[in-house]
Image 1 (cartoon, rainbow, N blue to C red):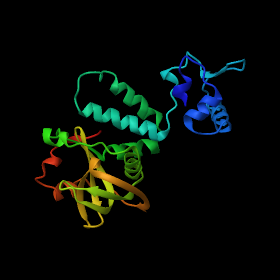
Image 2: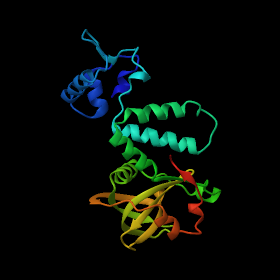
Image 3: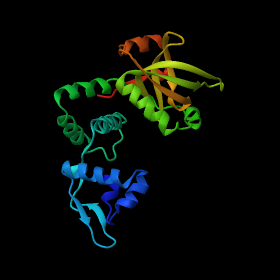
Image 4: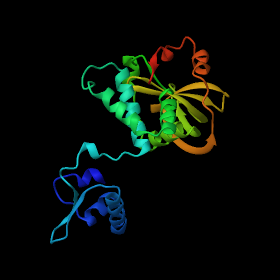
Amino acid sequence: MAAHLKQDELCTIKDLAELHNVSERTISRDLQLMRDQGLPIDADRGRGGGVRLDRNWGVGRLNLSYTEAVDLLISIAVAEQMNSPIFLANLGSIRRQLVASFAPDKRNRVNSIKSRVLIGATASTFVQQTIAPPGNRIIQTLHQSFLNQKSIIIRYKDEAGRTTTREIEAHYLMLNYPVWYVLAIDHLRAAPRIFRCDRIVEVEATNTRFQVLPKDSFTQAFEGNDLLNLKGTVY
């Protein structure tokens, strides 16, 4: 909601409620919570008035949740590993500021998560032509299972178009740009398997936790597979 309030035009509570598909009471409560967190929200109670963030409020006042900060930090680390020279000059500084914002215990958890994100070689032209981005719900559920170390049940369509149902543990994520893969333990086979994220057609979360295996457990199992021609881990 903060992004909408940062626009030049005033937003009415009614408009915000319709935009976010919630009640006006919920919007009013959220606005008060934002004020309590220190966000400078202006209000014009006159005819045709509304609310907005102070125009002088900027990037220096960003309030990121822990999950948002982790996502941003990992995205920065991935971008640095891609070695693209454009727009990277200040990423190191941003990364250091984000890391410094974490408490020591959360900093250790972030480092653990980053070590599970691997960067491989660029995908072949043939593979890139077959990409069909998965839906947001699939991405979000996979994302949460990866962070929380909980297995998921997936319906997966293989290269031949066959669909199977598996319960998997997402131990590592690997980017063969622009294709993401999951290095997982497949309960059906009781063995390591690689799944292309864009071939996951359905996903369901479970409450079954798993302990992350060493990366060697996967590199040895897939020795000789071009997918594991790694440039490195996200550091």
